[in-house]
Image (cartoon, rainbow, N blue to C red; front, side, top):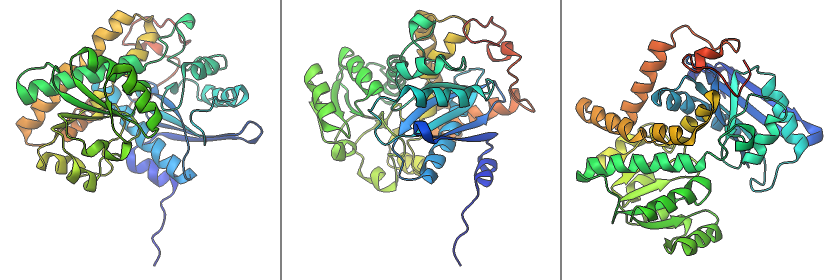
Amino acid sequence: MPVRTRTVTELMSGAGHEQVLFVAEHDVGLRAIIAIHSTALGPSLGGVRFWRYPSEREALADVLALAAAMTRKAAIAGLYQGGGKAVVLWDEPDRPRPRPLLEALGRAIDGLGGRYLAAEDVGATTADMDALDDVTPWVTGVSESRGGSGDPSPVTAYGVLHAMHAVCAHLDGDRALHGKRVVVQGAGHVGTHLARLLVDAGAHVVVSDLFDARAQALARELGVESVPAEVAVTTPCDILSPNALGGVLDAPIVGRLRCRAVVGAANNQLATDGVDVMLAERGVLFAPDVVVSAGGIVNIAEEFTGYDRARALARVAGIEATLTRVIDDAAARGVTPQRAAQDLADRRVREEGAGRRFTPGDPAAWTNGAPLTRLRP
């Protein structure tokens, strides 16, 4: 008998999603899905991803997984936000979005009344966020001239750097990255900024990207090595840093890794459950991406009460201490860091968010009592 395909609501209930909105506006070429996973701790916050998906089914699977990961990311980071995500089916991610398409997406976000806060993600730009901001106030990562924080990528990279410090301290008893060989997989927004930070820290950097010309250009700029995308994961190094799309680590890939640790900003790096155990069995330390990549949402959450870059960077530097706590807890309990991070996040949502759903009319609930400055209540 053929295997029955699960319905959308079955997929939602299986992972605890609250709401999924399908958006289409033929005249402007908009096809999008917005997923709200949880508003137990506050409004769902997550990026808008413009990407070429083979089918709507793949787009749905991606947005559901990404939204759920955002809930855990925000919870571990101590934010008063939940997890959400939007994906736009867009065949050419590097091609600018037409203004009418962005306005239509903005209207859909506005219709959710603040339950979902948009941000920048793969394929998106600050200009996209500004265009959404013209239609709805429920958007973050807008230009500094609008009271926002601009592109979150540099701060996300800063958080990854501090996560690497925690990993080096655990592996070698010294947090310094000087002399460490790091493969930066993905030379997009986050990967580019991370590579520059690593060079400044004295690391031996290798860059790679699906678009080889992009990696080569960055390598020339920084005076570092580049390798083709297909060999990046097998390149010998101390740290492999995935900073593009998720699902990069599956069973066959784990068997080919030649690194001591994996520390990157890509969301949902583990392709399936159990890959974290395989990594541990191979002696590879996996730093959970829900901890490592939190710099971006910590940064944009600062917009709610008046953005200050120094304050944001100080909070993002705390990723080092958070990851150290997760690694230590995993060792003490005999579980993987991935499991320890998930348990930490789920416990906070369960204990602080029991029986709660975000109400847009109560903005103090998602700023922990601080005055709301940029977004309307």
